[in-house]
Length: 277
Image (tube, rainbow, N blue to C red; front, side):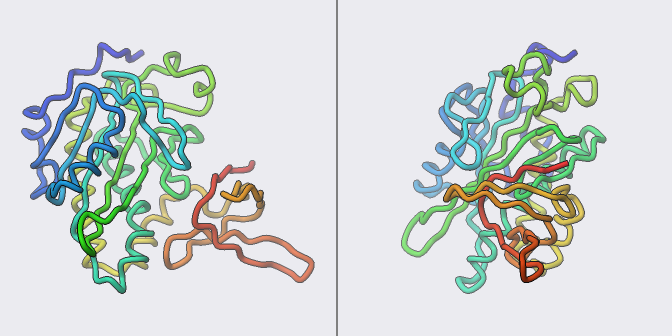
């Protein structure tokens, strides 16, 4: 079983020696410890950091996931990184683009995991990475104005790489997993990050040059939420159940609910999704 000692320390030299990107990761900040790589990346973005700048840390003390949840971030085992996106579409296209970015980032993570390990993760809408029914990782995308009329996006990624299952907190052991647990061997984090940045760069370019409908079709093929009955806990406290039927053009999840007048579709843009058996 993998243990923390199976993970070689991340270094700038080891990561950049493996990069096959044009820009992503060429400006790279490797930290031993930080509160949150997303927070660091957003600060750098506000200071003018270039497109593709990456922050990666051995440990986060205040890592966060979607909906304000804390992200379990032990030192030395896993991958915690954030990437700055500066290249944007036209103002007219921007709102839909911002909605689709997290979904495409999730596809990039899944493809990198498959390339490095041979595993075939699925995606739980909107951007959780699963192996079977266990969570392998997740993403948190945040946007901000980094100057007059200039939007910047930070893609934060947390992946459980070499944490042994028995080392997860008790409340996570039945719902979380790691690459080492699934493959039975430790995974080199520098190689994984290099592959991940290559995939992210490819999809960042595709988001600006390819039809978003085509990209969403690729996401749908990996999404294990579609076609399942789900329970959605909405931000306002409302709970909705129904069939996750399809994606809307902006990547929202369409939930089909039975009503007295027949079937109605609810488009969910944010909420906590639970897969029902």
